[in-house]
Length: 436
Ligand code: NAP
Ligand code: HSE
Image 1 (spheres, protein in one colour):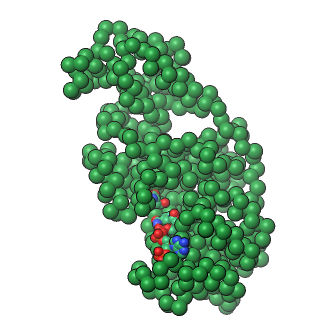
Image 2 (cartoon, rainbow, N blue to C red):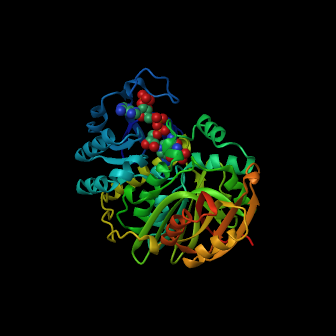
Image 3 (cartoon, rainbow, N blue to C red):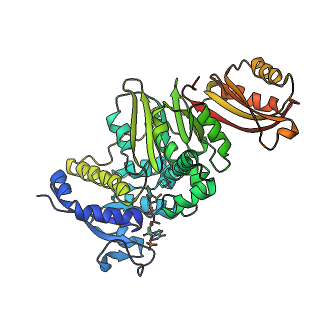
């Protein structure tokens, strides 16, 4: 049998504890796969006195990163401490020391992924980051290996568990946004500060990582158009239901004619769309490839053991590469120069909710505005406004056929100048057919 491989951990929180548990409890599986064991040699933490979720020999714990990064017996660094700047430096130091790195850090990989990949490659090291997107779902390996011969055209993801939990509770049980967020925090899905979850930034980081890998182009975090769910109204979810639509925070990445678009936004999905059935904190990534057609990867997007499973899949990949002598040999240069789609190249259906003066001719004015921009209606419905009826207002929902984002922006501008339109309450993108 080969000599055991020693790993060092940066971090021993939720994910780090799961990694220790897997290494201890699944050692036989690792030995069977690798022909050698894996042992933890050293662990960086902030606080040596803190009670831990797993038992670790106290002599392994350190608050000095160099004890882990410079230990000549350690082959693989597992970065599960989070943060960006310190972590980036630690990882670059690890490569200088010819150590391979496995990370779960989406914040870091979204911002510095290409730089770190190049540094790894330069030093003949591996850098793997399966756990950074969608926790326990092996989506990165699915794209990089399983679908490697295909041309991926579209990736749509529910990649944030907190927002999916909130939307499920609001939609299925009529729970308020605030109460649903509080529950998600109590259950531990949300980040310590949940702003990045609810404002879509966490999902945007994951979509930047996914889009780079799926389309082999250098998407930056700034290229991802982001809006979150913090201003969503229950009324929109209720109207959506009437139209056979379910609201989800969707990461959308599309690649056509070598041009890319990536966004994260609350989106209405047709109830036939496979992503509409993904509930609570679960994640799913829907991938459309030219050859494979539609596929969907589903599972837990966070949590100690699911995320540790993804981390350990990377550790096993590094060790297998080491046994074969092929570390650092992955192609890291993007194949396509990045060209972002312009708004007139981005297509979608839209839902608008308007408060309109309830008077003869109001519908005609609104429809001629849409007609003049060549946007046709798929559905239009009017509902009374409970407390506003006495003000002579009605609520109008317009669902368009497919149009461009550019035309959608023009309609939004023009609606401001239509006298009968008192307020644009909301507008959302729609994916999939609307029920007739
Ligand atoms: P966590 O529970 O907060 O644990 C962080 C660990 O890192 C703690 O052990 C902490 O030490 C240590 N640490 C943090 N900053 C440090 C510093 N400057 N110096 C030394 N030690 C430091 O975090 P987590 O939930 O395990 O997440 C870890 C990473 O995995 C993050 O990048 C996160 O985005 C990613 N991730 C998490 C999940 C999940 O379900 N939690 C899922 C996917 C990806 P102390 O314990 O002493 O404070
Ligand atoms: N806060 C994140 C989520 C954790 O809700 O999905 C996993 O990245």
